[in-house]
Image (tube, rainbow, N blue to C red; front, side, top):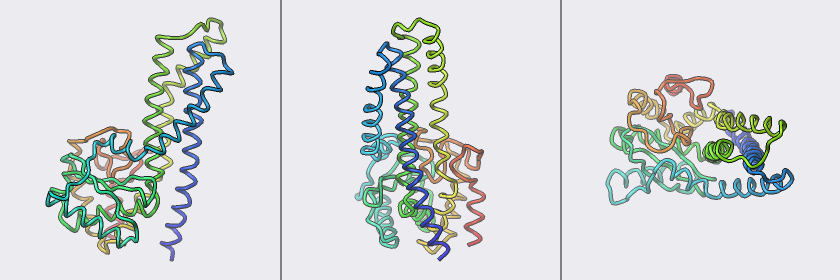
Length: 298
């Protein structure tokens, strides 16, 4: 019962955070688009009228194509049932979906020698699980099941929409901030009074800080979601030691072959772009040692 209550609370918090992030994204996108329009000499009122629908349309498009964006960012490909290891992975994902009472997710492979995996999607009916080639090559069956159970739990716990939308926020803000900076440096319309100069300076500062603000949205993805996915994944497989052993191998497997964009780093079972047990206040993942310890105590 306590686990069920914890899961329900986590799902409720995820829904609230998803709405807040969407609103944050809308506001920040509006500000960025407005700044670009303003610096190019468009009247203030017209700039505002342009910025809001553009920002709103972008948020809708970002949500609609969020899964495809993650696939592109991670350079993932569909698993091939004609390949023995990939067929085995497809079967294990299907078995785990049945155990979780969920529709079978799509199964993808990332051609990286590092051991890793992630789940993404807009919901249990539109989800996918991706594992790296390194995971297929280096994990035994129990360890691979533990990793799949962890990712299936992210789908079951409805973490995936929050995480996927956040990836869209970070990528979009980084791109538009660069456009804004270039607009200030190489364009600029005809704003020549002191007030305009101040606004331009503020805009440049904002463009520099915007990617940092975007990075902070990752903090909306609580580290507790990883602990919960570890616990509920171990419950699905009935073998916490399998996931603990997989995490041990992940810890020893230095991230030498990261593939894709850093914007998707928070989706993985372990950040592929940082040392394995690295953690600070900006980390979206708790230290692997802590996760292993909790699993071994189950």
